[in-house]
Length: 190
Ligand code: SF4
Ligand code: SF4
Image (cartoon, rainbow, N blue to C red):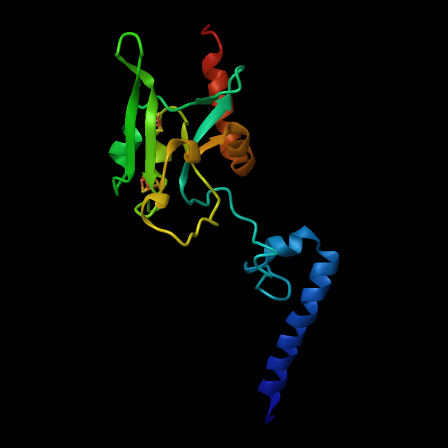
């Protein structure tokens, strides 16, 4: 029948249009979670930046350095300045110097400086994968656009540092696996 295709197309459009309201009113957070996926009810788009899609755990942007707070309130970075991440980085965008013992002048297992050139970083995650100390992890924060270039895109250690709790929050499954392995290693051998 002439025009049947047009009617079918409009019906589909209206179905998605009304489904959006049904999903938003009754679907709660889950409706946003499904947006942009094959399971989406109604519209596929979201009202960014008021809303944002739920990011999968393995999403990768720029690496960050994990730290815990010591009793003195100072950051205790996990990084030992072993340099493996900088060696394996395909774009060579990590730059590290090792801290020295102020009395002996000998290098100690901590980084003095740690820089990442975020313009060069290709978000591959190799650094995080190879780090033997779970000290560098891939961040989820993609809102890092800026109006300046040059040195502001070379992140220094304080800017790269994020607390362990943040890591546990954005990558709960990875964190749980690593903590279980850490606990198993800490068990005395039979
Ligand atoms: S982040 Fe990891 S791999 Fe890189 S220097 Fe520190 S301990 Fe070594
Ligand atoms: S994510 Fe890849 S490119 Fe970026 S710093 Fe790590 S290894 Fe280098």
